[in-house]
Length: 319
Ligand SMILES: [Ca+2]
Image 1 (cartoon, rainbow, N blue to C red):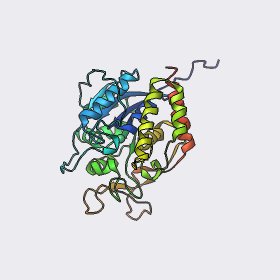
Image 2: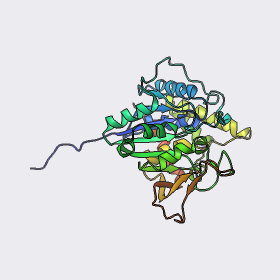
Image 3: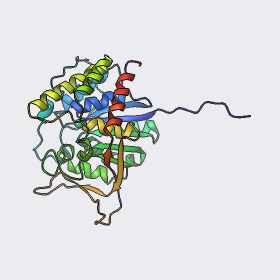
Image 4: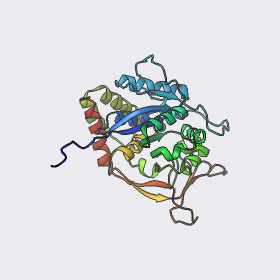
């Protein structure tokens, strides 16, 4: 007789490490409403603005969207503090541009971010996947504090770096520039790393039609995302960055099959260098002889990304 038990349906376990952050907020919102994934923890770090604000923004966001996921506060400065860190003005003073979320007044996780990451990994029994859309300080601290942690993680999906170019300097992307030592630790940790860098995120730009489709869904999640997009359009019109979905594409690289194509390369972060500080060296020609350690995003599908994001937003009306 055939075994008629239904296949066991296992939700993926996701931890979001972020510096909320306009595009972080979109990434978190999409992840919360992704069909087969459960966000088990959010950890905050400095980056787009001070960690006190990124953590409060993350907490207000998830509570506003009806999630009880714990939010842990993390690092306020990079591993090697050179005193050169300042907030990224392109996300506004609050980190969320002109978007104001209700103050939930809630409290943070009793553990700090590195301990919360370890706790989540233990609970997930080898199934934890981390989407890191900020400087990698929390992740690196967790790896340093808990040496077995990299082997307990199923995937570490990073928004950061680039094969070519930068947005902080000519050669460095913002997140990696903010803590290259942390990026180096993550890349060399042995955890399965997936790096979605500027090479592909820069092609992931939403427009007014996309914002209208999102807003039309009418839920809290839809309105948050649409309001953030409107802020980005105003920023673009004032000469700033366009509505580039850096962080949401990194989330999609984990959560939306077929959205991002990866190729394995050896990657390291420049921690010194007069002109190349914070650059991610990607050995595309195999000249170093080092074994590939990172899956690097080399192509992405904008239509697939847009469809996924809208599906997540639409699902927010059903949950
Ligand atoms: Ca971010």
